[in-house]
Image (cartoon, rainbow, N blue to C red; front, side, top):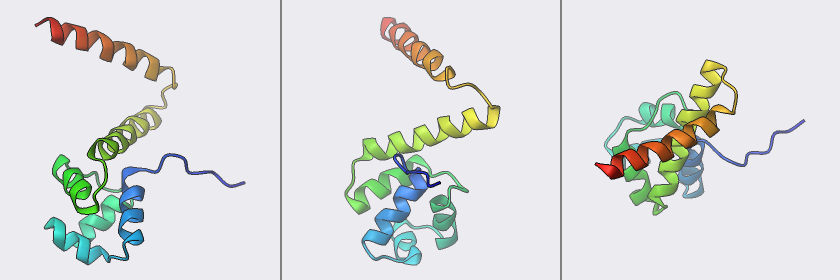
Amino acid sequence: MTIEKKHPSFGEHLRSLREETGQTLKTVADNFGMDASLLAKIERNERQPTKQIINQVAVYFQVDKKELKSEFLSDQIAYKILEEEADLSILKVAEEKVKYLKTVNNAK
């Protein structure tokens, strides 16, 4: 049984961008001003990127920053749901809370 990858993690997407352009970990890491081992950990989803790294990836590989942020945030949510062994219905509750918080913040 194979699992189809419809939504890669941020790290998987970063690795595919790097590999598609034929670049080494060291080359990309040097361009980001970081150690290659840290970049490798981000690609393996062992470390989370900072907002600065997300922005650097978008500029360096000329990809949509909004898409990268979406991948990153969805990773965070997915891992938290798995960690807490929560039911997916929590997503609906979170969606309603976001709508509510937007109205509260707009009212200020």
